[in-house]
Length: 406
Image (cartoon, rainbow, N blue to C red; front, side, top):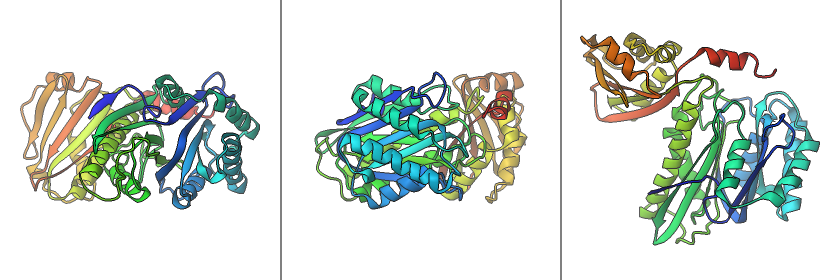
């Protein structure tokens, strides 16, 4: 697998753009992705009962439309809790783009992120679409502009692309995402858009995405809040001209690994860019009896506010980790747990069989002072494992969310 520079425009036949349309002041706030040919589409969406209008629109399109040609995204207004009017604006947005692109309204997906409860400024949205279409390009810079335009409280744009060989054909998978707050997915997370020139059936594309979200987007948390707008979309236009992937096998596995790499990378980017965060916090549970047990334990640790605060303070307060494991609901023997802290600064065993070792607090602090830190918990029950990603909890998280609307 080759790692490339770029994002949603890396695959053949995809163009993108990001502009400052005027929804937000002096910031890019609208993006568009267009495929030169019809795409197969797959998607996963928030399990929050309160679903934003774009989630409802996209779920309908992904489920019922044979093909997709474009995605229109706005930042600044979430179009959530906006009733029938908000859903109608999704159709208006799709129709405006479709008419200008010469495609069907049901071939245009939409996505929104920002403040909940406000209606979309449709005059700005429609004018933005008219502005974007002539500016669509297939360059890495165009993909980066789109990645920047979907940001809200994100501090950096998030994009990645990889290349693999499938049936002697070069296949590219590229993606972008946004997310820094209100991140605790239970299906997928925030907004994630992946494009690929792979030739793959709609059924196998959805199968791959649905499986991958469990080990990527579903394994991150910033603040325990599952968004109303969580959406992950994958578009495959077949322009790599590989033999169509219609079943499991070597070709499917290669594509799966590429999509998984992109998805995990994007998920980690979101966790590490959590609002106010200073560190990416990775938790790996090993020696579990089942995968489900390892998932439950690892996610309980990364969502513990006390543990997240300790990571911010570079404090090896391992009791908080063991406590979070204890209330997770997963069964294990705390008197058999080994715990390690690890980073670029080294690795240190903190407890053995549930009891603290005579470790150096200074060394522990040095390890926990890196930008990426890891806790490894071995529960010695089996061979299953799981990895979750989160971030530290800082003063700035409260500041950002206290005045988010103002």
